[in-house]
Image (cartoon, rainbow, N blue to C red; front, side):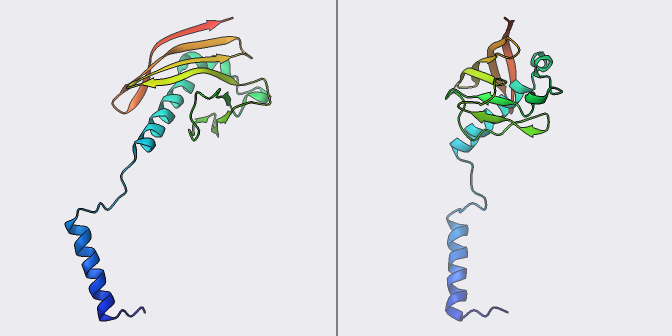
Length: 146
């Protein structure tokens, strides 16, 4: 059992009163960086799950899972997305030739513009994501096989 002195109990009460009267929140608010990271995570996840792209992933092939993304400096670090039950690997220089190559991924308010190449499948995917309340939706797209 912990025993507190009278002066320690008074200090605790003073601290509690100060926290209540100054409006000290019980939880730590999300910073803008946290919100931005969560938004980019959701946006990138919606890209990877976009129906038109699914035919090109071929998870049954040996070197396709986990999905690897070459960032080219366009995807900020710390975005965690899942594809085929495994975390996607974001790399500056992938060792294998099987990767999504991000040429553009930038945000202007509630729009994200993207250009993504998948060289192993000969597919280029360009478009725009729009944020609708809490989720991102592909608004315009151009999918080209080469």
